[in-house]
Length: 367
Image 1: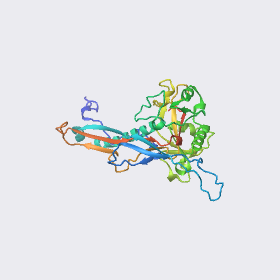
Image 2: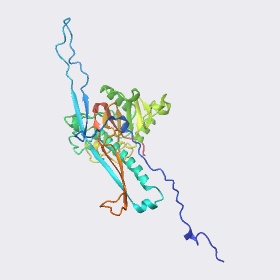
Image 3: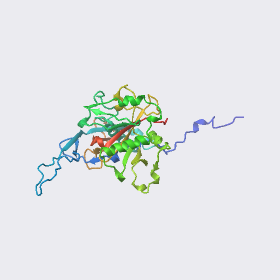
Image 4: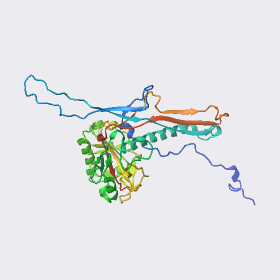
């Protein structure tokens, strides 16, 4: 006797598609909230952004008034430095066919707009991150002048290492502290309380003003924050324990030794690609471990007004725009394509390199 089953009549069955999309990895981007922002006005006659800084306080012009009623003989001179950076135009396009748009189970156009925004945020955060650690250009690659380390605006970076050493910059070149640190192994390469205190102290010595709440900011990778939180010697204060939890930075997880720790999933990580001290400028895929060839994570300790970016909220023609094209033209006479893209102008200026510290460490995390 024939037995009819789901196997024998399988052609009538189809897969059930749930219209609920699974969540996908979205980067935690945090650097924009610490930048000094300036608008991008239209018709300004230039596509570069300029910011200014006055000289540091000085007592050199202050005199002792030995004779009563006699004015000082000298005057105090003001110094004003202008720093410039050319805006970089960035953009991408996602193409969809008219058939896909008419028949797709999901709203591909809406998802394209969302993905464009997330990609743009990641791209701009990457440019800012790279310039902070020493690049003159946007993108993922760093300086191409590894031997001389000549930065725009004659900037000299403040770089510390978890072992307690400090990079020395002079005449456009750096010492070999990076390659020395690469060879060090073990727990001494991890970011610990002594290294954190060293970074905060360096900012104070440099007269960097604290950020919000009278504290400095440390933007670190999840792996490095795990090292800090896992160190039993640290008196870590979770952000949830603050008396004012409403005054938190985006991504803030806790504080230690005068620094608020903010987690970023887009940190700058380097290794030994070149085998030279220029490796500090070459981005590597994330990795862990404390061996001689392990990845080195750059944590950014920030004071106020350390760097500047364009103000994307301003009503400027340079501000980000999402552009959807769904009409026929000479290249698409039958209107078979829909494009969704974004374009924007962006750059980052190191306003005062003395107001932030690049702290390099390895990590015990295997994530």
